Length: 200
Image (cartoon, rainbow, N blue to C red; front, top):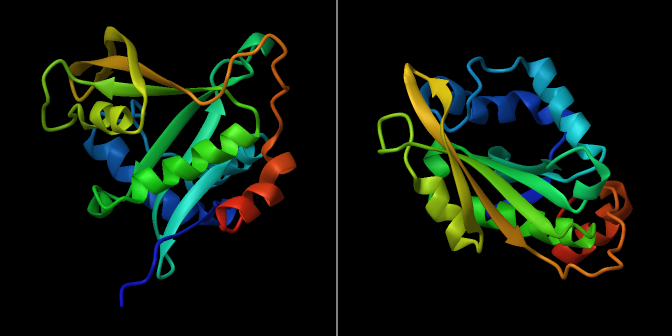
């Protein structure tokens, strides 16, 4: 029987494995506009920095990391506190297996517990699909309830080509006049682990 996919909080010690998932997106695609794969130490610091405020989740099966998803600040000014930018990377041989959907569902539930209201996805898109980039991420986010907001044209240059950047958003809570303050991940971590049945 195939091992079940388990979700848990990522740790800085996962940096090498998560970097290996991310590296092909840098070297072989325009999904990310980074030109160089970050070093293992830098990757570990990115995980550490994210976990100070937001969830950073990993999907695991049989001890192997299959993908990861995390949230980060949308903007740093106080009025933007209720919005986050979401990111997800799945091992290329695990696409269309449900890993991404499970990661995003858990991420969304935790962010809701933190009183986050707006999920924003910044997505690289081509004018026409090519060998480096498709519009699959638009379809993935739309399937999960994100709506298309707008597109910036020819704003990213990689592999000698210009790419666009689309924004999609999803509201996960009511926008009341007396908005509850956004809580750090640490404040909901234990409760989220119990509710979701995952190790956080």
